[in-house]
Structures are given as structure tokens and as C-alpha cells.
Image (cartoon, rainbow, N blue to C red; front, side):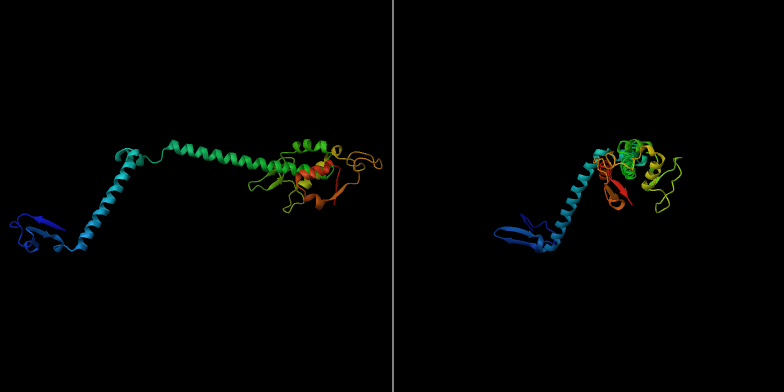
Amino acid sequence: MKIELADVSGLPDVLKPLAVSAEGKTTLDLAALVPATDFDKVRARLQTAESEAIDRRKALKAYEAYGTAEDIAAKLAKGADPQIVDQLRAQIAEKETAGAARVARVLRDAATANLKAELAAVGVVPEALDMLAAFVAPRPAHDDNDNLRILAEDGKTPMLGTGPNGGATLKDFAALLAKASPHLVRDPGKGGGGANPGGGGGGAGKTMTRSDFDRLDPATKAARMQEGFSVTD
């Protein structure tokens, strides 16, 4: 870096040796005084400082939306807005309640469909399936872990049966209901369509093993029973 000088008389003695005269001009070579590498370091520091200053200005501009420094400090001192917290809690509780209701409805519908299939398997006539299942709807219930439990008539005590934990299964429940309502059970001496044996009608003799029946989905089970199938062990 060179500086042109009109007069060197005022230069400090330490700088006079750096003044060079040529072609009627006198210049002062500052590079001879400070190494070029040091100039590069200075320029780098200046560029870093400028970049940091730009970043600070951007950050300050973004914080202007929150008010003055005093406003921000006051808000932080208050903590979270109780009204906003209450709104968030209410929204979360509403979603959890709605989700639990949907799960309960799906489980209830599945239990009802399976119960109707089991009722059909023990011979309850198709016309009575919906009525009987609706009448005892509160008794097939689910615990907090979504496990199906058949309740006794008091609606509180678990019904005993052949389940792995000693509780009743839907099959046990259907057998109990059929026994308690013989007037709703198909006459075993008639075919599925109600025709007398030997009368040539109605699908007499249609049978299905319990293992084959259990592999069907609830809708197919009900359809098979309406077609006049009987389940054999």
C-alpha cells in the first residue's frame, strides 16, 4: 500500500527511510512497515466484525415484533399465559376423549358382531339375532387394556366360563342365552329354511364344524347361519 506525498519534511524520522522518490514523485510504502500477512489478518477481522454486526441487526429486527426489551422482560417474568395453557389442555383433552370414544365404538361393534355370529352358531333364528344382541349389549365389555370381559347379570361381576383366565367367552355367553331363550332357537328337527325333514326344501343337512366356523369373519358367520348351516363340534 503506497501513499503519494507532496512533502516529506513533516514525516517522522522512522518513516523517512520508507519514502521513495521517482519520476518527480515521492511515495511512502506502508507495506514495508507492516507485512502483507498482517494486513490480511486485519482485513479478515474487519470482515468478521461486519458480518457479526449484520447478524445482530437482523436478530434485533426480528425481536422488534415482540416489543421493546422491557416488554419482553415483563412477558418472560410472567411466564406462560394461563389462558393459552388452559386452551391447549382443553384441546388435548377433547382429542383424547374423542379418540377413546372411537376405539370404544369399534370394540363394541366388533363384540356385537361376534356375539351375533356365536348366537347363530348355537341355533338362534336370524330374526332374533339383532334383538337378542341388543338386549344384552352392556354385558360384553372391555377393561382398561381393551380385553373383552363378559359380565354377569349384575353388570359388575365377571361371568365365569371356559376362557383361559376362567372368564366366559362369547361362545359361553351365546350358549347361555340360547338356553335361557329356547323360543328363539331353531328347531333342530327342521332344516335351515324351516322345512320339515324329507319335505325337500330349505337346506336341511347343512353343517359346519366349529373349527371351520371359527375361522370365518363375523359377517360370513351370520350369513352361513341365515343360509341354514348348523355348527357341529
